[in-house]
Length: 441
Image 1 (cartoon, one colour):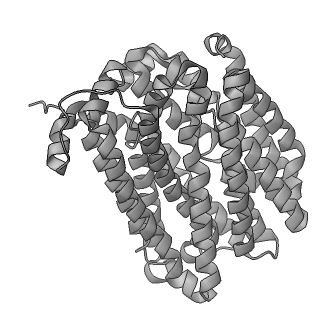
Image 2 (cartoon, rainbow, N blue to C red; image 1 turned 90 degrees about the vertical axis):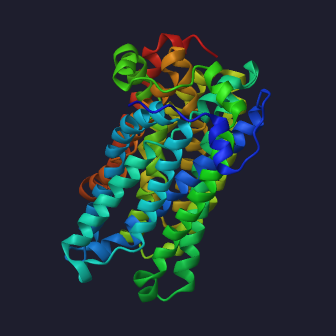
Image 3 (cartoon, rainbow, N blue to C red; image 1 turned 60 degrees about the vertical axis):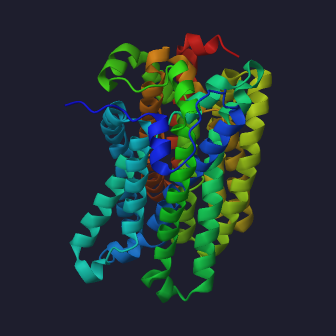
């Protein structure tokens, strides 16, 4: 027996929220609020795990190897979420079609928050042996699988309802969640490290950010549900053809758009981990700088990233998104050739690396979501955008910390730029190949 998707009014009634009988056109500002809240919560989860992958997990789960090898093992488990994410999208799209967007989002966010909070209860290797490692890998897979279901279509809705001359401005809004999430996660870990003796931090202090991540997820869930399940937004989703369809059918019809869309933001997605996760690992392993100091540098640089993301909206509207993304890809390619060595140049070099990196990241990442939605046929836009986002993160970012650390250890810091350069070339190739994108401003 096939279940009927619950209407927006039905979900609102179940939540005890008022029901509106008349449709009004929701403003881009309303959509933007939901997008920023949702993306910040997701990226906060992401960075809490990423920071712990460097500062905590090698000691707790891989004490039987040296610190470098333990970090490489930790980064290998880190990548599992990006592999599981497309699988989660496949499953949750079926849930969306059968039971509705609100049900899908509720299940996904509780699963994401539950997986994240459960990490805080994991025993160490000293207490449970290899079982602790398998549990960590399982929960990381759970995080990635759940992320595949957090796609709510609000970013696409925002882009499609933006004024014609401000598409770039509204396309950058979802991307603000990344630097916001990093700032909060970095500051929280810096506070915990500075406030506790090292033994207490490794014993129980590191667990608190994971509890906070769960709490933020619950708040974000209700904030997003108040938007996506309303009758007004349900009407808008329907009018814009932002409804889930068969994943396999979407791939058959839109494979070329999916491939180009997945490669177009590779430069920014590769740079994403090159200025957030990888530098922390290098500084922690190969310099004498305290992790607290670098976490504060990271938070400060992320603030520059916020400004750059906002600036990307103005620049895209003035000069065109394709031109901006192409210029950023060239800038990232140049950055890859000299900047990594700055991580061995003391605090001043680290600050220069991080600030320049986050400015480039903000300009490029700020428009990466805008590449996706408008390239699909209307009936495939919702599902195609989710698939493209998953594949972009997998190819561009999933293995970046592992690859960069391996290359740097074996061939020097300059070699880590090779991974970044490959992402820049992928972006330039995708922009050149997409004649439809090339014709848009």
